[in-house]
Image 1: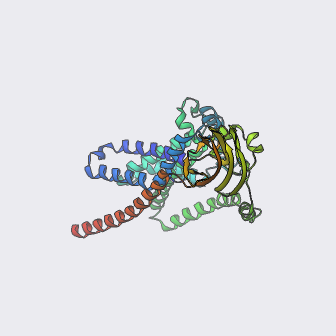
Image 2: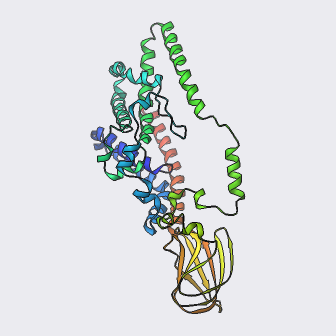
Length: 387
């Protein structure tokens, strides 16, 4: 949940299907209690992510939630799915990604026809489920899968080949079991066991070397140079960031308004005179004069929930102004009354939901550690008593 939201959705689906296979075990109170405890800990520990995410989603329209901007629709996924030959041929994407499964893995998958009869009964159900899930995941990578008829929420993954990650996860267990069973079959004749292992390693070497070549970097200092540039840069263009996290209004004007906007306060409605401005990072001070009632100000910050805007009058009285999204996707606010001389201070403070979510995750993480320690002690005591 903290690494890839899209994968979380499919993980939840596979977990649900997994539970359906073992629905008979859900009758046990202990199993249900453990599942409930796990779900609670998962939600609490990851609260620092999903609570602010929901808050941001409800506060403005962001590109990442827009299916058209993100191409998260069935047609896009269908067009970008793999051709069957790509799991055999080393055809790479522009970024160097290859989808070739490789001879060692293919060999171990094929041997399932033989090994499935010899899998220990204790693990056979899981083996069959993982084998089935791996085939489903792999099938979903190809153009022959009916993506165009899939509901839109399943097309959030954008690229069908992302299901290859799930295939890898499930097939790793299957291949591991198959390899052990095959070695056991040769156990009676030790020399054949070593011959089998030697041949398998030799066959694996070329594929391993081809994978290693994918990760070779011509210039090891590229990342270091880029990091130094970012640190030393005084300003950054929106083209240098992940634009899917920009407000939809900003994305729509990314080649017009965003390029033309200067690093200063703009008067969108009404009248006011900006005397002086000081901006440093997420802190800004603006001196204004002769502000008319219902004047709308836009500040040089992309809109995200959590900005605090304080207006101080000549007499020292302070007012908290509401931070809103402008029609261009920037932070803006209304001054509702006539004022002569004021100072406005803007700081990014974060929202109270965001701050509370951090505390929740911290406490939940600590509680989870204590829970694990307690459970381990309990199991140890139960084990000694059973002896």
